[in-house]
Image 1 (cartoon, rainbow, N blue to C red):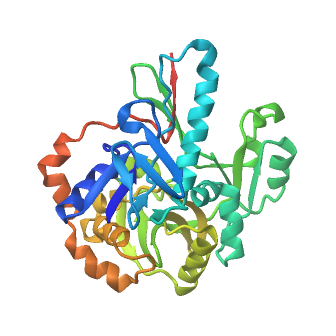
Image 2: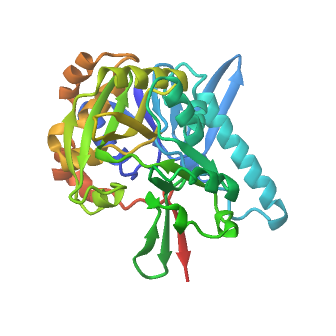
Length: 363
């Protein structure tokens, strides 16, 4: 068995996890996605059976494939101008063929590409969460001014606005100008109708929270961590970037755990990072899940968490392995702290992609 990671080798999670797997004796193959250069080429063979080659690596029965962060397909820049649109579409469809075929091969695929595409939809997430027994805030997703204003007719509850996807605005040659984050908004602060049509948005009832929770789903096991910021930030992501967050493992309420596992089964995902807000009465409110979600930053803030080792145990154990098996096997792997102290960390070049968040550069 080898572990195939679909991401750039210098991705901020691929590099440390590849190093840790190899330290434990596993073979790891990294492939960034379909492209015209040799390392990103792919071959699919259908001759009675089905075979796949990704760059220099074959995908073999029994392998584990982690679809971490596939990069957009890259076409050959020397394609003639009249053929450019054709080549781009052929690359796009070929890339999709590769990604969707993986879940039909005799490999363990985390997560199946079809499941990951569906569950990345915020509306689908909230629907599944409610259907499986999780608390969700009242939500409207719209680009219709009437829909926005109807949401704000109930003035008894505070409201927030959030984007569908992270985005950064930068001024050429300077630091970031602005980053999308959740913000509170009142009815009287809503702009005129035309402005509300400039971009769709998510409008949601605000949860007056005691603290946030980041939960990591590993198969049939969940690990939950409280996130506390000095100023009780509405959106803790900026505080994480500034190193201003305290992380502690917390017990997951049994009803929340059951609901999350039911959610995951219906969504067909084995792995994901869930975000919850816990209100002052101790109720957990589902906010979102990212099936490619970052998790190594938890080890950065609290090395006792040891989420790197837990994830690698989950990745290399059979599907459905219990918490006890994960925590027994995690001892085979080096920690995030050990990676940070290793020479390998200094040898990894900076990431060469901007897959998420999206970046706008202003002149």
